[in-house]
Image (cartoon, rainbow, N blue to C red; front, side):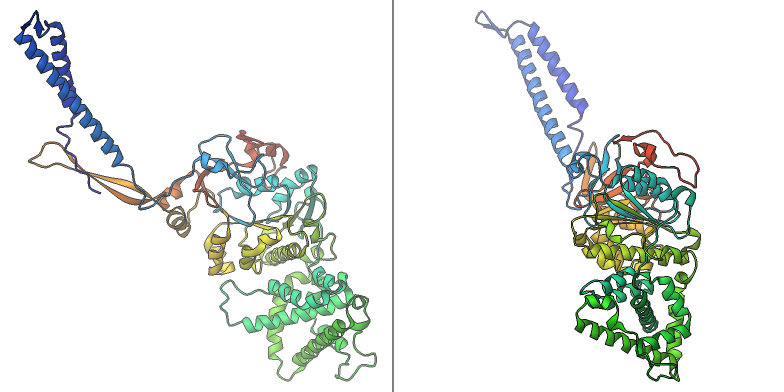
Length: 585
């Protein structure tokens, strides 16, 4: 849009001069005799009155012209929005979406408005992206542990979160369970709980009608233990499938015999001991070392206590399947060319080694609680899954498997309405198998996932490139803490998420044959915030469902009363963390 304006005849100085002359002429005319007096015309007075009127009329015309000019001037500078309508949300716009009573998930304080706490509930998934040093622990993780009054599962990679929050949660009436294989900070949090992932299979065997679910649950569990890489493009898929089959057989053997006393440690030791594995398979089939029928017959699946709760036909078919698998395993182990078994066995040993012996084994022994507690009882249950950051290669398998056990129990519970929040700190340090699909339909089961990590590229490596698109499309709240420095992330926020606003571009020019300036106006697109502006921001950016992007100020738990008084000491710091109070709840 072009809007040339000549400023010489609309100069304020010209208008002021004209107004001054008109005022002077009017004053002069006022002090002269009237133009007509006693039937005679005073020509001099009439001339002055006429000139005063003309000057006043000219001044009014010029004033109206200038007013019209200024109206056009400001109207021409109001963008139409055709290049984009992006803008920062006002506090008034977002107030309608805030949780009443300042409770539930906490996201900071509206930038520039002291005391304006941002509490937004969510029903499905949320994302927090926080580079190293951004303070995600004090700004997001701890405040959400304290603000959410429902059952929670918290991934705690250094044991600091359970030290800080356990006593506070118990004091307000929550049940706190701690899976702490490394016995980190035992002097603060006490002796931890244990949970056996094989309970899922044992429950199937002990539950009427559950026999039909055994193999499917084993498939899911083995996919978690020996998962595909994030990109799912590998020539080793065949060998991983073989490894999963071997784990399935070993789990079946152990659980059928020991039921809830079976542990992942005993399965790992069975796989390590090739001779014992072969003997177990022969016992199931009912043959001796020379593959001749054993006098005592096969393992009596049909006569076990758990078999009595199932339909006889289901038990018969299940027994046939298990014995056929055991027979195939014997053949694979004892064949003349057993290199295929060696390949399966090697991969299986590697995936199960962490569970065979060490810190993880006691934490995965017979269960001291049920994952169904997350969905049951009058009191909410918070489960802390504690890892040892100095042994992450071993512990990431444990974290991922425990998360899978939690989610499986929640998905299968009859109470779909009761929510369970998963605060998955450092979500790229382990892998939850099937997370991409879980993001799309987990809300139907009350699963509310909060994924917290440092970089989208790392998430892509763990879960695959398509998972990033799913994550961005299926998270109803996205929190970007200040300090973003990944070029890809900055570009994503600026170009794809914030979008463009329409601004007015102004240019001026002067011509030789015309006095004054010519002004040229045109509409142009500009990012609401460029990548460099985002990188230098002191505020964070929050995307909440359909609202415009929100600029927020991170507020640590140490600045919020009563949390600052309730949260315990971080064992890595050794002293209370207190700052000037910004919010009172």
